[in-house]
Length: 325
Image 1 (cartoon, rainbow, N blue to C red):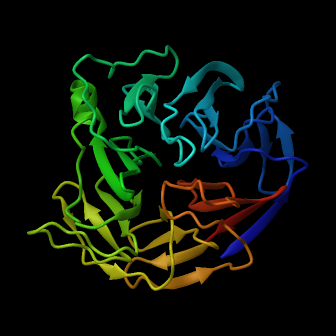
Image 2 (image 1 turned 180 degrees about the vertical axis):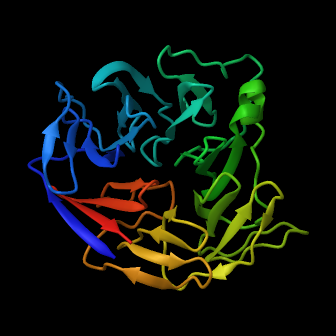
């Protein structure tokens, strides 16, 4: 594992843009891996935020409060409009939001009307084509949204009461044709256990990890045991043989079919074949998030994953630690 430390004078948000790190809140300050930096845009935003995401083309960004109700949608570093979510338990779990591309346009997947209702908003115009009268969403707290590499699927890694972590998968093209598919629970893997984390390997495979809670499988469901990982083959709705993970873990970031990053307590690389740690850096504290519910975590560093280069960036006060493997 290789580590590069980038020192900054101030830091509020981090994300990857064109293989550089960027702090959108502070006038789009861009940090290169050689330690140099430059301010790309004019405005620093007087908004208390602690997270950001960036569109694939780098034109749009969204800065927001993970445990808040508000965010700012930016275009080339300037405010396009404000975005809001429901107040309901907003101070408990991570804000659900993700950019994706569809038929040449950039969309924002989020929950502008109800905590339990996903919608697709065209970023440039603000039009929400999924906002139709027939919508009747299921009772789920959507969170930790992630888009598949080819933008064919959306996964929500949220929770239901009482609380119980779940994942739901949505085929984006079909949801545009029939937005009520966003209300019907999506596609759910035949797991029978609490789903703590998930990450796309590609558009056909989703890495999943069960929590360490005891199984609550229904009759007729063969559960993945608690504390195990598996690879869900989406087209056939089948899951690979479960593998026991030999350390506490949190949010996965899939590298390929053999390895993934895990950032619980400190960065580590897990083998998907054995569940064992093959590399780590225990000198970097990367938080204890293992669910979308994070209100109880006092120290939660920002983490940004570069899907192209497989690099992880972790904030440490005014230092960004960049890890490669």
